[in-house]
Figure 1 (cartoon, rainbow, N blue to C red):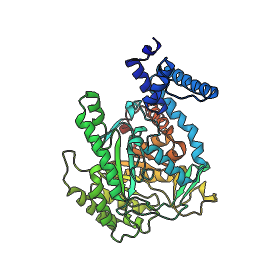
Figure 2: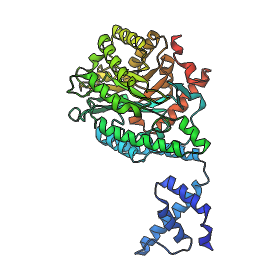
Figure 3: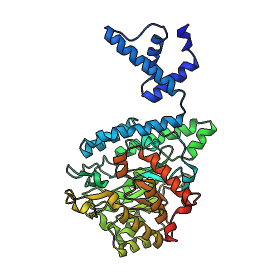
Figure 4: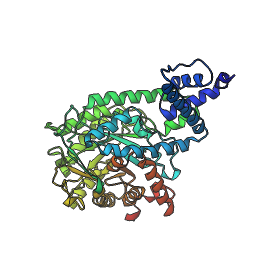
Amino acid sequence: MAARVWRGSAKDALLNKLKYIYGVGPRRFSATFEAAAGGAPRIPHSSKKGRFLTGTMIGLAIAGGAYVSTVDEATYCGWLFKATRIVNPFFALLDAEVAHRLAVSAAAHGFVPREKRPDPTILGLEVWGRKFTNPIGLAAGFDKNAEAVESLLGLGFGFVEVGSVTPMPQEGNPKPRIFRLPKEGAIINRCGFNSEGIVVVAKRLGAQHGKRKMEETSSTSHSLTEEVKHGGKAGPGILGVNIGKNKTSEDAASDYVQGVHTLSQYADYLVINISSPNTPGLRKLQGRKQLKDLVKKVQAARDEMQWAEEGPPPLVVKIAPDLSKEDIEDIAAVALALHLDGLIISNTTVSRPDPVSNHPLAGESGGLSGKPLFDMSTNILKEMYILTRGKIPLIGCGGVSSGEDAYKKIRAGATLVQLYTAFAYGGPALIPQIKAELAECLAKDGFKSVQEAVGADCR
């Protein structure tokens, strides 16, 4: 009789719960259940100690599964995201680049929690005709080669940006090239566009895009149709593709055009990265004439391709924080004249603002990201919002580590916000925390939506 208790839908439901929680297949737990229910045991026991240990594990699994099966899905998510804080200290013990590779690999293999809870409605907004469930995104640099797009979107980001991707594969600068400054909440890097190249990235994004299309085609339920409607080309959440130039290339425009031709069909928006400090001569492309010529060529390359009803992906330019007032005015003028779809403000800085200026690693070359960059990048953001008169969507990036930081970026003129360094230190648990804090900030000041708060400090 005991074996019959576990048969049927009740058993299947609990097995699925256990699979979700413990990350193992139902067959493994099925053997456990049959043995515990009086069926033929499938796990060999070689000693009394082994039988005791196995029995204990079985008992814990069944008891844990039975308890967890009574808890709602939102509570699961809360537990899983909080549990990631336990793992973070172990990553800090590793070399910075090794830890980064391990984190990307873990995400690529699905060893990260998946957000099942809906975002607060106050965080939803529409940009470029695309619906974002929240304005918090992951900046380029984390998933350079589009290895973990689905899992990263599944963490609850409103959008994820991959890259920078170069036409030809390149190793980047010699190692070591990433340096942590944990007390300052900062990182110095001089990676130099290390990339597997557009062919490899296109294959990965193409597979993801194909999977998404199959889901849309095979879906007949209203709920899934709505989910697809609010998602992008790679799934729930919006995907940005950041393209760069090869270090040895003498024709920058040709590199960006090649990136557009190969990758734009998989992107919900495209980014021209001309602001990394780690590729010689790259930042010179931010000059008025150079930027105008480059944007025209890239826009032409994008527009000459055939597009469905949704049209071509928006084109965004990522700029540096180390700009003079004249530089900022020139970029704003070009952006308005060429009807650029957006600007990301900003990339890393070559300066060393306090408290980094006196740090032993301050002399390392490369771009500084994290908390010390916040004020500098936010000031540039505010200036750009005023110069463009709020006509161009701006993405605020640089030093965001809390919902209050994101809110300050939005009030300074950002429609969307990106983080990276804080995510590297805080892990997945930081994402729901930032969203909750941002929703609280908006509601506290009487805003009914993110859009209402954009540029509030400039009015």
